[in-house]
Length: 199
Image (cartoon, rainbow, N blue to C red; front, side):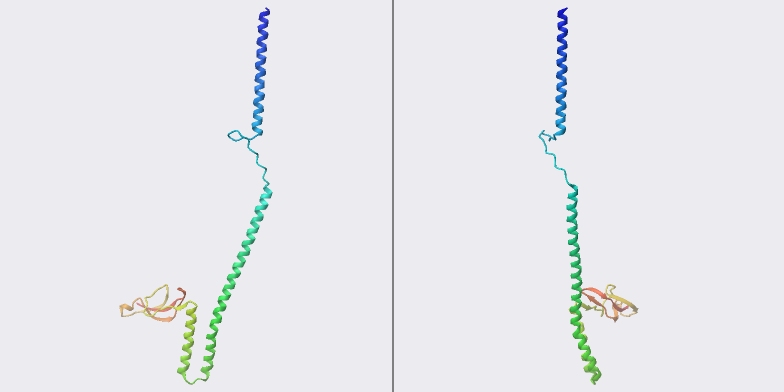
């Protein structure tokens, strides 16, 4: 009877030890889990430093300040560019006007001469000289007349005001007469020649 009681008591002690061991293992596992949650680690298991909290308001203010400075610089550049362009146009206009003034002077002298002149031929020669001076001035500024004599009709250069029948087949589709001369500015038409075309 005592032997049986002793075995029973021994079995209880063994169960108690197993229960205590299991409880201890659970506590150890719980502590390990808490440590894992509190201490970030890399895949290799080494601890990683937690990044400092970003001050988003300060970051926004810095970016906004940079944007405002760049925008102000761009506006200043744009205003300066517009002013320089306007000044350039004014300067170009000034140069043109200054160069045309001598021609005006010659016209005034010619008008004074006409009032007293008796030699019509001499007056005509004077007017022709002024006309050549005007053509030279235009050429210096990139303006040249469009050639129309015996040229094929070209809608890029000519404006047909009428057509007339011609007997010579070589004249068909060509400019027969120029009513108003056209001009180009650096190869760009600024006025079309008004012409009569043969058909």
